[in-house]
Image 1 (tube, rainbow over the protein chains, first blue to last red):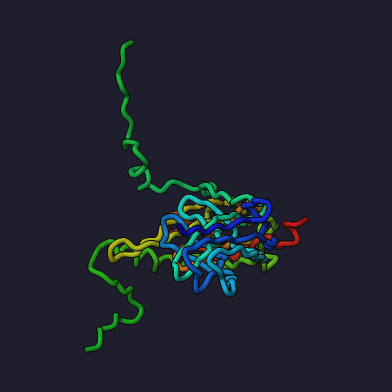
Image 2: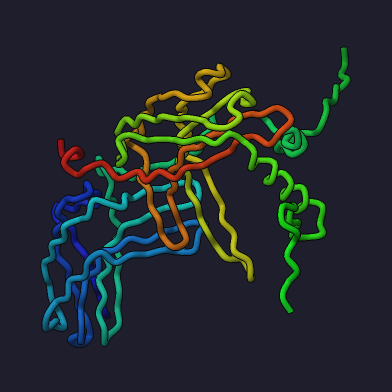
Length: 151
Length: 164
């Protein structure tokens, strides 16, 4: 059975932008693959159509049926890993072999303080309510209703 | 056959629908609004940095009843559904710069605002964006308000500052 894995140095999964990322990749296949490469890339997740960008690719020469190789990447200063209400940006490493075609992916965090940036929602300061917004307030009826109850 | 152009000086109404007419008329009236000129310093802004905003209105400044200015950060996600394309927006930061009803402060002034370091820098993918913009809203009685947006590029914090 074919097996691929990506191991990061010291088992780390979060990094500061600009930091060095090192580790090893290992694969065990039915036969020697024609090519084996490791990609450092980011992609978006969420409501928008996916965007992605490959930052760097390492090709492993003369890959064997069963092999272990080391790698080293210099992380760029941006973009940061973030998670918002509509969009998330995720960094990942992907090990890909061809003939046989196999792939494995490992997600990482690249952001200041090694913590994904979390985006909430903010209110616009001092915003006046438009006249028509009174009619489209969430679930609130227009006007007021006084409910009579037991005295 | 060439399309017939509207007479010079008239409001060109693109559609027969009343809504479009109102929008066109509204935009036309807004052409006579005071104009604002905004200067940001430093010119290059990064996360965690303090920015100074200087503004100056020209034209009929006296008609402005109030002024609100804020630095807005928002997500913009574009997606297709069927044959239509939609863009959803979500504001994650609205940093107040100024809010005033004093005529002198409305006409011109300056203020500072700090961009928190723990937010997201500007990002522009084909379909997904993090947009930063300076928003200016001036209220005018019985007239279309001044509503302007000036895009601002917010860079990531310098790597050296992060290491420090």
